[in-house]
Length: 507
Image 1 (tube, rainbow, N blue to C red):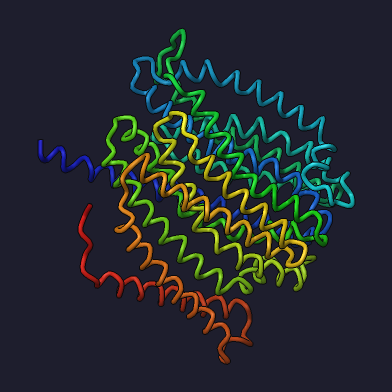
Image 2 (cartoon, rainbow, N blue to C red; image 1 turned 45 degrees about the vertical axis):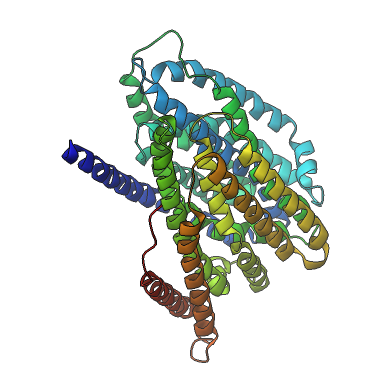
């Protein structure tokens, strides 16, 4: 019995590492294609009224992606499917009962958005000078409501079966579709070709998961009705409201940014695309461990939940704070290398780099918010604390953005976003300790404090190197390599020195 108990955690750890590696490789490939997509768009279309129009339409996939793929759908469906796998009939009854109704409802929403496109543009970005191109793009991107919903249902089902490859490949397929449509139709259609690519990419998300999803259903027996348990509808409503409230931070930025100079929304978007990469990378581990967290929560094992959350808090903080140090120090070089080509000017690069530096100050809060919310929703019961915490953070974002955007511009919107999400994350962590698992703030705070100090030292080192006389006049790539090496070396050295302190007592 001792051997069995000892080998099971080791097997779980090995499985987690393998799944995390596979997910990291595929998501990394999708992220790389996403960067290529942004590079192509910056080169072909620059940062002006046309790209602003597309980014208003981009609000739709940006909203439905966390709602129907990464957050709401996964946070509701993974615990439900995990419980259904314990039933003799398996998951097939749930799929046959729920998926057709979900698809029908999402199809109706898709049609409604397409019909209301001009009014929706006026609501999202009333300051646009030419709303016509934005309305055309909205009608095309509306198709992602249906496509993302079906793809997200498939992803949640596959992850609950511990099959992470196909769900991790969806953004490879998505960005491949966008790039293909831009390459084929940019000349005759202009920025509308990117919106067409968004629609096609959403369909490819379904195609890439379909074979593995169908294999999952073959292992289940049909049944008359699924028994998904009480409270699932309430849990779904709580998750959806949380996700919409969180995504509303982007809506606030777009709304306020539409009244600023042309290109302001684009500068915010390009900075966010770069800044969110480390957050997404850090949450790969959380995505892989969420089914195990749901299983521990369903079994009432609060100690296992506590250990999982504490470990994830430290690991995610380590990745995010390192990336924050690097991008704050090296934002001008990164933006220039990635985007300053074609119609994306040096002035666009300078504005985007400044926004990125400010935006990165809130990435730790974004990562902590996502991690904490998963811990709440793992039990698949109605939990309103994440939505309430996020609503408070959204209020902070809106008030600060409205007060400062007119005088400070886009950096004020980035600062408001960073402040709001950090306030929400800290609030939710406090509630998490009281309501979900008794995590040790002293123990975790000590580790995160060490990481924060290391990140500050690394950031200063990167700035010193890139501004030194030997490097300041060098090409951006040389500056980036030298500054990145300094950030990495100092961060690693600071962590080694921090670990030499006496070990903390285990709680």
